[in-house]
Length: 80
Image 1 (cartoon, rainbow, N blue to C red):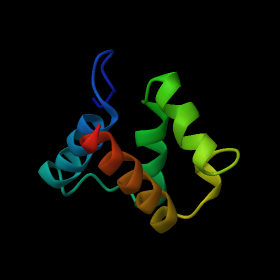
Image 2: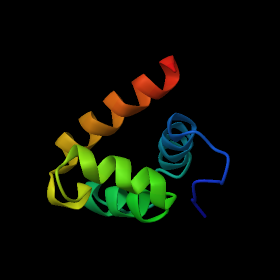
Image 3: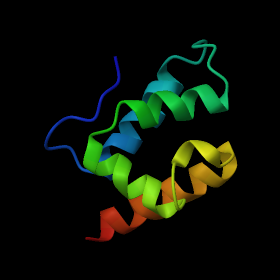
């Protein structure tokens, strides 16, 4: 089961999620379902950050754009 832990940095959560998708390649979830799973199991403060980047909710952008936003935010998280 995937979930962002209480003290887990956003970049760590993203890496954990990507590794889980690789580890279980037959999961059967398409891109939008993967995005939904990732988004729904984040802490509320992280969801707020993601939603602010899309001026509303992350779930209204396409998967490619959402991935770009997440990658950008997590790269900044690594540098902090």
